[in-house]
Amino acid sequence: MTDQPVPDTRPGGTSIASVEAVVRAQMSKALGGRRGMVEAAVPTILFTVCWLTTRELRLALVVSLVAAAAMLAVRLVQRSTVQFCLNAIFGIGIGWLFVVLSARRGGSADDQALAYFLPGIIYNGAYTIVLALTCIVGWPLVGFMVGSVTGDPTAWHRDRQVVRLCTLLTWLLTIPCLIRVVVQAPLWFAAKAGTIEADSAVAALGILKIAMGWPLQLAALAAMVWVLSRDRTPVVEPAP
Image 1 (cartoon, one colour):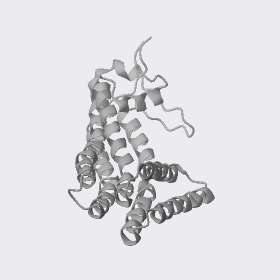
Image 2 (tube, one colour):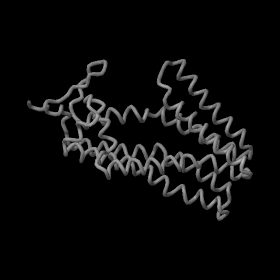
Image 3 (tube, one colour):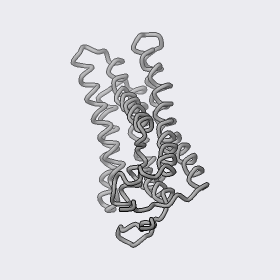
Image 4 (tube, helix red, strand yellow):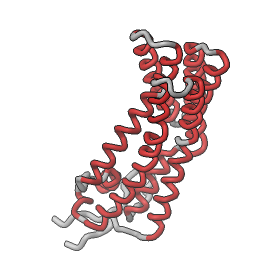
């Protein structure tokens, strides 16, 4: 039986016949456009500004949470996707948990403010390791995006060309996470050790979290788009 392109069977009947088209569609959905970027950045901006101007950690957390909740309410009224607002609220919640844990362990106000940024560093470190491992073992994460379209989550792995493409794209997704850890982790540890002032570290981490968030993701996406524009790798059904 000759391998044939597999059309996308999602509602709307849009045909997706190449790996490149599948990944472009998935990445576009994941990024959420300008509005998604704003919804991700605003809570961090408000937390950092409130903390630096008032030194009231609880106020900074509440203000950032209220802002995220307000954006969620607007999304609900408009009946649009709430994914990015929920992501922001979840991130604030995890940060708040780390702040509470720091307080219970006798941490100072500075320690608690630094604790807010620790989950992001841990997340990016873990994500870097997971993405890198999927490439190293030969099962790149992006390949499963292709599998979600073909209906068989592992059929793509039988085509070496597809595996090579998905491996390269997964490495490109890994780079932003790695850069965040390499830049932010030393700053966080330096503040904890007292090498630099906590206020300076909090300000820098707040700026870096925004500057190295969507901008790095967009840079990675641009690199992926360039790679995807060069070829057209068919999405095929495996022969029986």
